[in-house]
Image (tube, rainbow, N blue to C red; front, side):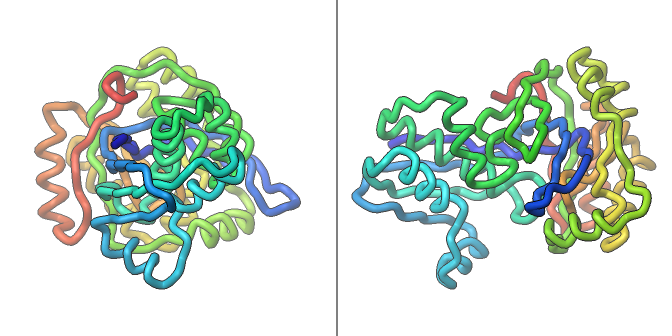
Length: 289
């Protein structure tokens, strides 16, 4: 049996720089793995199957929808040729549809896990090439850590691993359509464009103050407009000791960067304020691989 940890991500900076004729968007993002993770195990079988403790994913499977994990199995088989199947067991901890690449990171872990299970001999670069066919965030999730992601997510530049930093995450109990957010972004007359290069420098300099001052997300204004609770959560975080706060991806998850000594207190305040939401302290930095 093979085990893989599938780490969630946050976007320290996300700029949408254009839209291609095929509908895909060009992005420049500073992506950061965090300690929140799912766990997948792989056992050799003749066919591929998925078992999970998550009710929502089980329901989707019962309705005949292709889970991204099984899509990864299919895409890898198409690339490599038939090599066997696997019983895949997923323990889900990352909230679904949260803007933290929960599905993408499970797909990436599947590529890594099957590569190990069957000794396929695929390099990290080959796995990233395969990953592009599954989803925009999957190539980064194959690699993990800290990286600049460009193009449609397929161009990755590894950045310096920062010092361990505490964050607190809040995922409101709302659903956000990534497609709808990007369509609304396309209609903006004056979209925001964070300084991604400044964030790259801040990360490589391991300068937390500069990281905080350069937090930015082109999509945030759109999702905030659709769901004002996101701005409310950010304001609450900042008024209760957070150094900085930002929405991750297309939302709705918001994360706060905070001092280690303030993290627990902030987490408790957020739990009291938003008892129905996912609220949890995590970290990013040197212990993530």
